[in-house]
Structures are given as C-alpha cells and as structure tokens.
Image 1 (cartoon, rainbow, N blue to C red):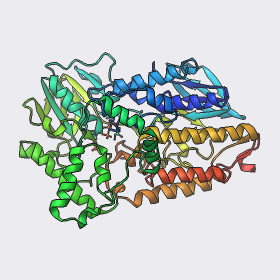
Image 2: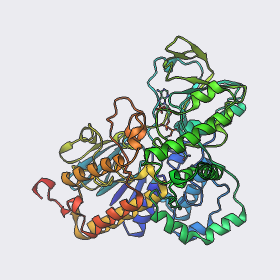
Image 3: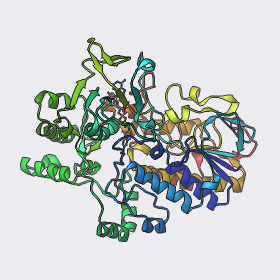
Image 4: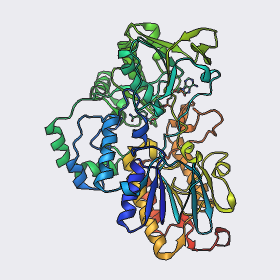
Length: 534
Ligand code: NAP
C-alpha cells in the first residue's frame, strides 16, 4: 500500500476518496463494524449534531450537495450515519475499507510504516494517515466498585446498538457537557426517575431544532457557493461571520433585545451575535449574565436553578452545549439534580452511587456522559513508534507537540488529520477535515514525485507550540480550568491547550503558506536519508 488510513469517519472516508482520485493505493482500517466514526459510536438518546445540517457535511462535490436531502435543522445521529453510508457507497469506498480491524501499533521501519492490528496481522505502507477523530477515546471515571454494579452502565460514546430500555427505571446520569445536556430531556421522558449528577454547571442555548421544508432546502442548495465561501472566510468553519456591534456601547434595552434575538434564533450562532465574547471579559460577563438569567427564568425551583447556574467559568470558554428542553426538564417531577462538586461521587455500590457524605443513590441504570480523552487519547491509544523506536507516548509525555497539528518530529511520513495543535474541535469539523485532507493529499503527490520524506523539524514544532499557546492566551479560553480543551477532564493528563484557537481562516492561510514555500517546517529530505544527517 502507498497509504494506510486509520479510521472511517468523515476524515478517513474523504482521505480515501482523494487518494484514490490521485492514483495512490490506499486502505482504511476501522475498528468499528461500520463506517461513521463518531456517528457510528455515539448512539445515546438525543444524539444530534450541534452544527446545522446544511453545512455539517462535505463540500468537495457539488453533486453530492445537491442530491442529499437533510430532514432537520440539526441532523440526528442516525441521519448523519446514513449520510456517511451513502457517501461510502456513492464513491465506491467500501472495497478499500477493512471493518472490525483495531490498530494496536504502528512502527516506523526502513522507509515506511508497519501497522499491526490487535489480531497480530501486519500491513505495510509508505505513508500513514491517522483519521482517528478528536473525541473517540471514551473517558469512563475510574470509580471503585463499578465492576460490581448490579444494574447496567454505559458510556454515551459506546451506547449499545439495540438501545437501552429505561422505561420505569431509576436512571442516574453523570456529566452535564454537550452529551449529557442532549440526553437528559430524552431519558427523562421514559425513565421512572432520572438523577443528574452534575460536577460543573454549564451554559446552554436552545437549539431550536425543526424539520427543514422543501423550500428551505431548495434555498440552501441554490446558495451553496456562498455558504462555502463564508465557511472558508470564517474563524470557525461556520457559514456566518461575527457581528461587528459592540454590545457594551448599546443602551441596556437594545443589548437585551440583541441577546433575545440571538436566543430565539438559537444554536451555536449565539456566540457570533456577540462580538469579542471570547476575548473581552466585560462583554463575556454581560452575555454570561443574560444566559444565567435564562436559567433562573426557566427552572421553577430556585435552589435547583442556582445549582444549575455556572459561576466558575465565562460563557463559551468550555465548549458550549445547545439543547432541546434541557433546563425545562428539571421542572419534571421525576428529575432530580445532585451537585457532585459539593458532595463528590466516591464509589459505585451494587445498588447505585455513593457520595462523600455517605448518601447513596439507588439506581438501575448508570449513564456516563463523562466525555473523552480528547485529541491525544485516540492517537496515544495506538502504540505509535517513530524513528529509533521512540514512542509517541514518550514524545508527548509533557503534552502533544506537532507542526500545524499535521505531523510530529521524529515520526516521518505520518500525518494526523485534525491532530492536536490544529483548529479541529473549535470549528465545524467537516470544514477542518476537508482542509487537512486536501493539504495532506497535495503533499503526498509531491512526495511521490520527488521521493522525499516529510518529518516536521523540532524548530517548527517549537514555533507552532508557541503559536498555539499565544492564540489561546489571546482569548478567555484558558480561564475554564476544568475544560477538556486543556486536558483537565482526564486525571494525570498534561495541562496543555490542545486546539489552535487562532481561527480556521488564518490557519488555512498558514498551511497554504507552508506549502507554497516548499514545506520548510516538514524538513523534506531525499528518501533513505535520516533526519539527523539532513
Ligand atoms: P464533556 O464536555 O467533557 O462533559 C463531560 C461531563 O462529565 C462534564 O460535565 C464533566 O464535568 C463530567 N464529568 C467527567 N468526569 C466526571 C467525574 N469523574 N465525576 C463527575 N462528573 C464528571 O463531554 P461530552 O459532553 O461528551 O462532550 C464532549 C465534546 O463532544 C463536546 O464538547 C463537543 O465538542 C462534542 N459533542 C458534540 C455534540 C454535538 O455536536 N451534538 C454532542 C455531544 C458532544 P467537568 O466539566 O467538571 O469536567
């Protein structure tokens, strides 16, 4: 094989399609029994995308854009999985995808990579591309007694395909990030009782999901060139630009009206209505207060409302969820909230969860909406060994180092789609993925022509790490101490700001400059020559 690609989600499928078109021999190895990546695994109740359907999709083929029909403003998990299945068949990708193959290790040998799966089967390639996703390594809390829990427990990112029948049962859900906030209203409808264990209170904005009419779809399809232009021009890959209104200059009633309008429209676009919300503390405080007021207005019990009110981080410094009736759910008689910051979970008992105070909550079903070992977890889950046998786990012991999130010094001819240090999770993912895939494809064409190797230089990595930190420091993002952007959700993980916060548009330009100037940060050198002698 010229190229092995690990993962058959949005990234791996498009990478395979591009490689095929360029005449490379390529195969995708996928651990799951189906394509879809994130959308294969995350089947929890309420799983739905937070980006709108008309732009949470590929842009590489106008015919695909025109023929696919989205049914709702925000596509549900099953619909996105169906879309990716359709793409797989439409471009005849399936014959080069091996399902049910979990990669255990990838070792640099001679001029290429030896990739070994968990069954011990080896495959060789000249170039290795990881398309393993940013949020695919489930983070299950290491709680004593979990193995002896008498009921059933599930992580939302590994939800059983046959579903979980919670009808009439006592359900406990741990975690109030984007996932928990989506799952709570749906679980509450059929559970006998639902107890939500909240460690950090979260802001959330109504999604305002709705069916898409034929007329809306037709209007979008007619406007796709402009949609794509806006996506490329924006900082986060969404097809709208940030408002140029200084909210603090507005009289109180006009500012309130601006927030109300953005609230009524709903979704992540709320952020774009508030200029400088992620860089100006006073602006952010004003928007955060508006969102706190909404919680008080919605939740009937004042004590519950106060517990649900975020006070320890500014709005959007942790990834903001959007919801469909989340705060309203706490007005149901079968739903209770438990503050596990005040009274932490200490163990799982056969009958439920025990807290530090000794209080025990009896449960039949335990749901961990506890997130992921983000960005680095999926890569470090594979034993990747570069030149001289150096393990990626050791190279990244103090946190990930990459050049542009695309490659790692010491690991020649390895390319990481949406790796740490790229905008990835701060953007609309398909936009970031397409940019990476196209960029990698261009570089591979050059390497095939020249016979060179590509391996980031330590200097380029150093410089990029500084840029990533600088970009984060120019925002309020590092103020959320418990954010997974910083690795803070996984015990023992180095605290390094993981994604590049300097904007997708600027990042794209930086990557284009790198290519146009001959890939100086990728230390191109003739085949067979080691990096040290280069
Ligand atoms: P998350 O944002 O990391 O939230 C995990 C939640 O679990 C947090 O409330 C966290 O509390 C809590 N938690 C973790 N360990 C805990 C423990 N030991 N005890 C008590 N609470 C614990 O994970 P997520 O909700 O799965 O979302 C991850 C990301 O996936 C999102 O930010 C988003 O980027 C993506 N996502 C997207 C969508 C979508 O587009 N529709 C949907 C879901 C997820 P702390 O905050 O205190 O750590």
